[in-house]
Image 1: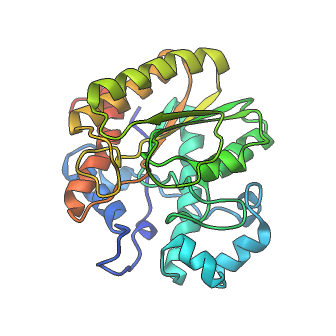
Image 2: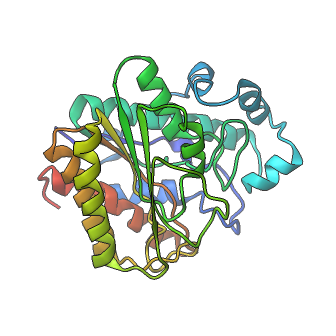
Length: 304
């Protein structure tokens, strides 16, 4: 079985080149995975736009309409930090569709990876931190409401706390939110996840990997989820512009392999989204994000 990888050309719309958010990283990630021989463009699965009715399982319908039509308030635009365009709006809705397709593929095949996703700062009726719609919350509500799963567990390893996910799923007991994040980092006001594992600044590979192993060895048997949503943020890397942890490339690969092996070793389907990652060196950043997809291939026993 080829590793299911989900991508769409909409993911990197025209965008200000000097903007803090690296919008071209999704296209560069696709290029890296193709150039490295992990996949070919024809093998990538292309998602549909996420239907508004599915977005509305997690988000306020009037907020969805305001965003899609470019009618956010000035305050919401400030919270978001991204300039609105029709292309960005389409990209945003398409990317949630991509995470939904990734979840479907993971349930079918045991593992699947998105070349985007992990928009965990988006809230019920407002955006924040470059995040507009929360794909992790949308997937959770959709699969639970459809009876496709009885319980999901979100294992969020982005360096920033998944505050939007925690608040949006606070009253959904069958969606377990786990956030492994740097304590002294955005957002300043943390939410209450089911499990918040706050890490000190400067933590490196070995200490971090021990926390990951201990958390999964405890949480997976405890909850026995039907699907794990893994946010493989690379802003924990020592060269990231917005993170304060000290992981190396090897540490990222060890983390990703550990999470995937913990899940597959217990016959729990797992889907990966790329989460946050920030650098002016966009090629290096794309390769960093690609560690997730190469790690998934290694776990499946594919030659590298």
